[in-house]
Structure formats: C-alpha cells, structure tokens
Length: 408
Image 1 (cartoon, rainbow, N blue to C red):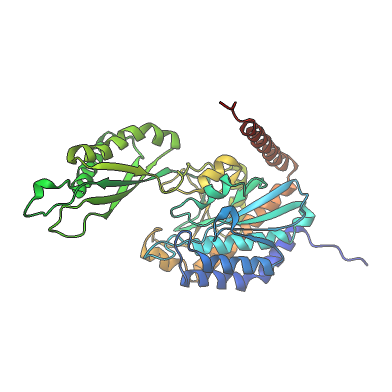
Image 2: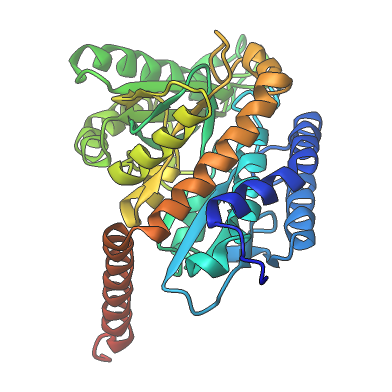
C-alpha cells in the first residue's frame, strides 16, 4: 500500500518537534550574549547557521546592514510568500529585557516548521533577520531597500507578561538636539561664555510646560547625553536625545512645530546654535491584520493560553511600518510574570521554563496561522491580491522616478 504524506498540520508539528532543543538552546544562547542595535553579530551568525542547517537559502548583509539577513525555503514560483520577522537586538545595560531572544527563536522555529509543509501548501517561507528594533529601525531600512517586496504577509510574536492579540501601538520619532556655545572660565570670565548646558535646561523646561497642552497619549521622554566636561568651564557643547510618541504619525507631524519651538527656545535664550537630527526613521503606529490575528489567537488557545484582545500597546515598534505596507500581526506571547519589558526583572523572565514554552507555542501558532491562510481560498486571494497591487504601485512609482525631470 502506498504511503500518504502527512497533513500540513501534522508535518508542521513534527518538524517543530525535531528542532525543539536547538531552538531553546538558541534562545538561551542569545540571552547569554546580548548585543545592541546593529552590533548583533553573534545572533546573526547563530540564526543563519540554524536556518542554513534546516535547508534554507541564506543571504547575509541584507539592505547593506551587516547583521541583517534573509533565509528562504519552499517553491520559488509560489504566489504566497509568508514572512517571519526575527528581532534579536538587546538593550544597553539591561540585556534581553525586551525578550528579543525569544522573538528570534520563535520566528526561526515557525519558519523551519512551516517550510516542512511549504510544498503541499504552495507557499514560500522567508525568514527576515531584522536588527536594531530598539533604536535604528532595521525593519524600515529593509523595507525601503526592497527586502519585503516579495513578502505577502508578515508575522512575529513579542513576549510580554500575558497573552494578547490585535492591538495597535504608538508612533515614535527620535530627535537629537545639539547646542553649540562658547567656552569660558566659569569663575574668572563667565560673561564671555555661551552656556550650551543651559540651553538644554531651557529646552527641557519648555518641553515640560508644553506637556500641559498635549493630547492624551502623547509621550515625550529624553536624556542629556553630554552636558559639559568640567565644572570650571562654561560648556561649549551639549547634547540631548528625545523620543516623541503619539497615537499616529500624523499626530506627531502636527505636534512637531510646537515641539521644535521648545528646542529652539534653548538656543534663543542662551545665544547658542542648535542642530536637530533624527538618528533613525520614524516608527509608524501598528495596524494588525484582523483575520491573521484571530487565527493566531485560535491556535494559542488550543495550546492552553488565554489571549485577550488588545486595544492599545503603549510602546512603539518598527513592525508598525511593515503593517502599513502589508498584512501583518504582532501578538504578545505571555511569560506569566508581573515584570514589564525594559526592566531587569523582565530580562530574568526571558529565560526559564515559561520562556521556553513561549518560544515553542509562538512558533507553532505562527506556523499554523500561515498554513490556515494558505488553505483558505478567500483569505489567500485577499492577501495575494493586495501583494500584487502593492507591486503594481511600486512599479508605477519606479517608472515615474525613472522618467526624471527635464534637463535645464
């Protein structure tokens, strides 16, 4: 009697089971070797090695970023390409206090498991190694460089205290304010100086007062990264980094003139010169795909979890920009802890039995969600039609750009 191939669901589960131990070892290894934005060389090496061993075709240095990569498997001519986003940068001083070690392992596990059924489902799998989520916008740089052009939809899971799905996030914009003044002896001739540190104080005071007139949900938080070198020298240079958040990018854009005026006030009051720069692209608010989110929630419920529909995620993510370009989900996989991300206590929670379970549950739920999409004719048609429309818009924009302007 001829043997029949296992159903996609069974093949996915079986393949995930074979890589269970390597995935959990990977999550622990990344936790033990935290690397900050654009310096995630150990993580990129470990992930690409795992995916290559699983039969994926790996490309390093995607979008010109040394620690970015893509890894693909499945039929090259498939009309549906499922992207799995892997984050792996850590936080300075706090290590993996946002759980990106778990995001990377779960995403790699989902990609490997889904690849086992890619032929039967008629889909292509693309794992995208996306550096610098904590600052730098790796996904945005990869999106702009075309790394997502062949991706029909994108999935990832993010650890948190409890499970949820479907929420939006805040838009975010980073600003660096640098003041240039004039040094002078602080005791002998302070009147000869232009105090750049004072410019920071004036700007901070203006920003603090502006908070009274800001809409609910807007956040402004910053630090002084340089305020002088010696107490007996009027500081000639000072520098601040600020992060601005609002419900949408449009709201941030509307508020920007008032915020910029606060930085300018520091320069006007002290006679210093001001330079404003943005160190990374702005993060858009997250817009999760409802159907994919519901499918994911159904699968994690079957694994014994109880995800709540989320209304709003207070943080920001560069996955927001991906979600504006193509159908995407960014649910939270719970660690059953009270600690919140970006704390030392949460870093401790991203290793151990609940963290191991989050990796495996997240990987399986994402892979099964993608399989559901591939097997549902209506939803598959919706996603692939949107992908084709996006490609046509990109082609039209490229043609317009290529036409250029008349020489003069």
